[in-house]
Length: 449
Image (cartoon, rainbow, N blue to C red; front, side, top):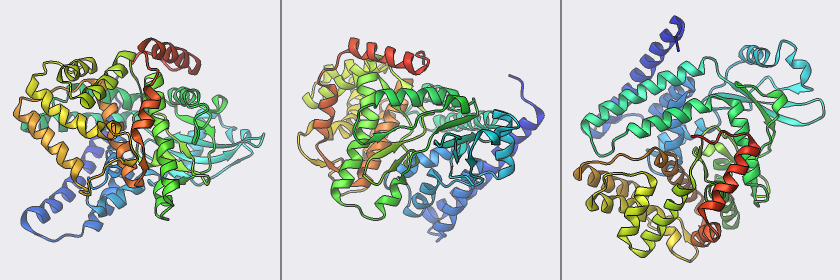
């Protein structure tokens, strides 16, 4: 696809802004760590939030993901970056008018009873405006920012370059398949008609699940760059947690989120791959609104079976079963030594599911425990020659880590083992494949990934 001169210039300008500003902040933080030079972390965090929020592209998603993992960043950084979940800088009314006219025609305002001039929320790829249809239906209109395809391509080039540089210094994880997966998913997120079909899919898969609400897309008011859906009332999760809700409510929210992520996976082979804090809200009754369906992954039934098999291998300390499970996932050339390293990570993830009792998702009082496990795994993989994670691993691992971080923040106390076993009790590959095919067809989601 040919690229215009203006788009190419925009990418160079974007690269310069990102590289220079983020590099400057990194240098100041490194100065504090290495040389003991005291710096203003809060100021750096504000700078970083402004840079990433202003860019609005996939780079901001990195910050969104980091802010879901407790203690992955200094507290000052996490506090600022968490605001990017729903409070990124919005485009003005001139942009809104032009975008709406290009998507619905010059008389677009006559199709609404009301349309808010101010954005209700702004995120990485688009911003949301509240509106009302002539029949009284309250809706949310998500408008994609200008020139996002070239923005995504620019970020992907930066990501590929960064991965290549990093791989020359560190061979623990070969990132070829990871990059391919991220590239495909990010490109898909630009298509709002695809997201509308994925929203319909989640409405089907979660129909009847207590405590979970999914908006309904409005096809007559949606295009590839405009997604209109029913408005759901709710508050950001972090805002509710700041009020220190009772333990019962924390548990109710956590159980709803567990079902929102894992009912689709274990019954339909589908995962929501973006578990950052802006993608769900809490309602007054403690139920949850699930939002943003751009990053969705459809898995074959055999892969889901492999996830369950790896759980059984961890539970039973069965190395042969673990080896077979990793092969089912798509890992290749696994020596026993490499597999022993991967099993450290598997035990960390599966441990709450192996204990039939009420507990926190992470029981250690050490807030850096998860990071220490990751560092040991990384060192082990580097020592044993590295591993190439399959594409299917990327969003599955991201969801597990991101959602686990949310459960830690909630301080939820649940019997995670019972919740898990309720989902897999009648599992069969054939039944999952049949349910998946029917749901994808009804929702209009392409099955090939």
